Amino acid sequence: MRIEVKGRNVEVDDELRARVEKRFDKIARQVSDLARLELELFEERNPSIAQSQVAEATLYLKGVTLRARDASDSMSHAIREVADDISRQVKRHRDKRRARRLSAKAEPRPAASP
Image 1: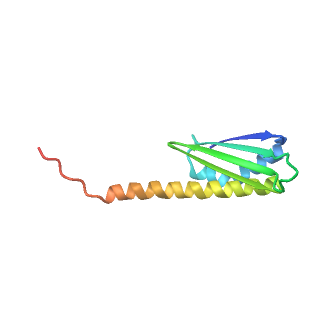
Image 2: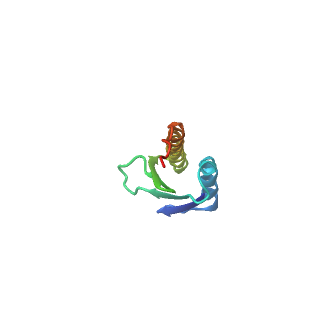
Image 3: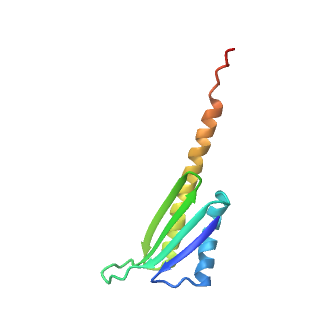
């Protein structure tokens, strides 16, 4: 899985990239190598918003796009919450595909008439 980290009003340094890659490593093992994850990190510049650190993730899989967004006091917490949400969505997507495949196998196919 390719991971692209973008920052708006936030500097994305090597430490932050390493943290993101470590956090999304479990998801990368569950999806195809062709999958692409875009993670956008930004800070809301409004003093009335307490949870100003925002992380938005978009995971492009074959035939489906999964999205998650979370805001928190700290960037690491927002990244962790987004990773958990995307992980839950990937698991649900895989279970749905597996159930669909198993139900198609279980149905008897009608014999072709000549």
